[in-house]
Amino acid sequence: RMRPDRIILGEIRGAECFDLLAAMNTGHDGSMCTLHSNSPRECLARMENMILMGDIKIPKEAISRQIAESVDIIVQVKRLRDGSRRTTNVTEVIGMEGEVIVTQELFKFEYLDESEDGKILGEFRSSGLRPYTLEKARQYGFDQAYLEACL
Image 1 (cartoon, rainbow, N blue to C red):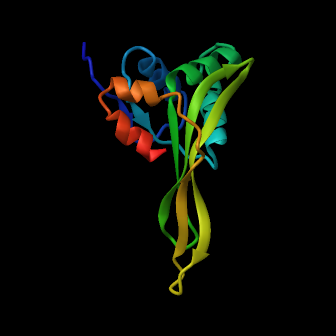
Image 2 (cartoon, rainbow, N blue to C red; image 1 turned 90 degrees about the vertical axis):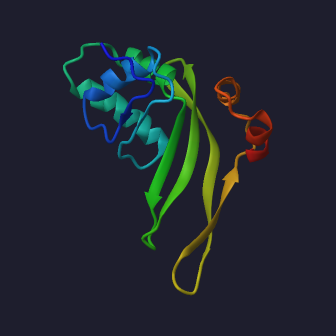
């Protein structure tokens, strides 16, 4: 029996999403995966749909709850029209409100202009919201002053 500290999956495409969430929810904090979606909100819906496509017979609300309890942060990376890849959103998963997974956007890339050679110019801006995961990050040894300065 292996006991990894982290689980990192290159890309989830199907029902294996449920296995990853189960592992993340049973002591594998800091685990990561990638998946394709157009927005952080759509990422959550895609995870739900991937699990529902499998043979697992559990209600959608239970799947949503499992996602909300397992996922802390969604980092969206997009390929921009100039061909560059940029982090465009950092969104925190807060929990459930009724049957809906609640999120808050922490950082967003804001397009400003294009350079003469066609490169997209922009800034990564904080929403000013205090992340719920800030305390968890401190418990894992991140410097509190540094984390506060990032906001």
